[in-house]
Length: 282
Image (tube, helix red, strand yellow):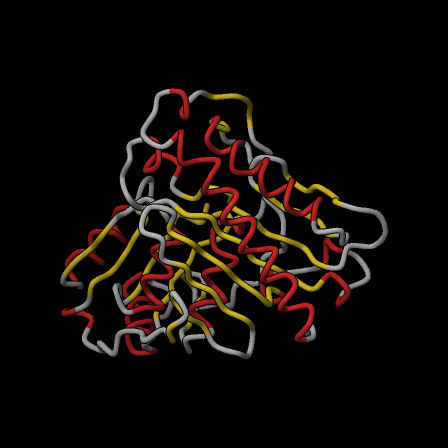
């Protein structure tokens, strides 16, 4: 575990990253220019101008920190910063919800997960379980979610209070169902009260932590680790449960190619019922 001084230092760096990324993307929100494709990202998807503007600020701030780190990000892939062994690994989605930002829909975020690089002899051994700090900011609303492992989670400095709903038929569920197996989706739609699709997984997972949603699912098996590394910790520090659709812990390695499904809820009864509906538990 990182000591208190390191937590404070990397927290300051993270908030500076978020602030600089917000300044960079703001002029591009809602513009055609922001949606120009500039290259293919390391994750195999097209990189828009607005994405690279945010990521460039992540790199700049980490370089200015004066301490060695490794960045894992959708567009750049894995990028070493500074000389000597990395102290930490930043797992970053510089702009989660790019399509929303380009259409000026107020749900797009910066997501930062931080792992202690000194825990393992080689960085490729780090997994999602090693994330010790997480930050997600909805750039449209200004809401900042953050967590430190073992110290709880907050939104705008206030302790997160999740939903206490236990009845699946009364629940509100966030979901990403594009290209999902429709038989699972159909059964889910018949079991819950409401479903929401916002197009920003990092924000929607944070909505599980603050009680806006009762749960969130993505059962495509194609969800990127960089999208969820920070929000997973935020939910867990709110005593929530995050697994794949078969109820296995998420232990994917920290790289842009790792993919997973996800079922997240703060109430164990809701989580268990969702797993059953999705066919993960007979």
